[in-house]
Image (cartoon, rainbow, N blue to C red; front, side, top):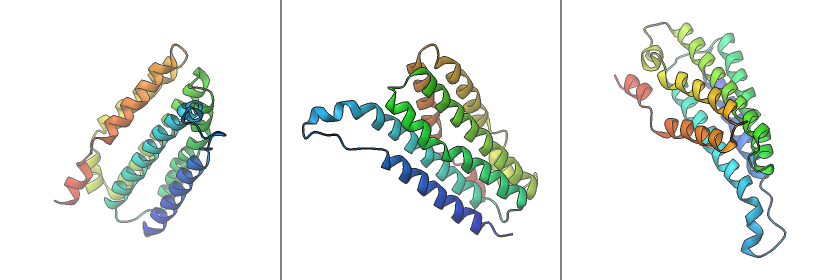
Length: 191
């Protein structure tokens, strides 16, 4: 079946996720600049989550550009990814409202880990559908960056109970790793 419907649905869900996150940003009750001070953790958690959702949207787009079709397994794997992404607004709000406390930071990492595992599963399902010699399989290769991200998330979840700032630093590190353009799929599409 065509990949277009899956892509359109995913784009819609991701747009809704971003909308829900921004709606959680409430203006302060005061006209002084100091009234924004209590909102700093909420805003920072929003920025980090916006970047993560943007990274997934971008990588999902590249993933789908490298394939020709989807099947039922791919649809379910995609829904699995969207499930984890749909939880990001909740943990973003909890994390920001509680000044990056241990449990919210750990759950944030668990949601990021779930999304990363789901993305890995989706890519593997699509590789299986298109074959080991496909553009996607060649581009993804051993997916070292993806596997490293999983390991960092696991470490960050544990560190959230030692020092939540360390966990936050690791979440930022993974985001920066993925912000650096990954040209593997684009290179293989242009061949």
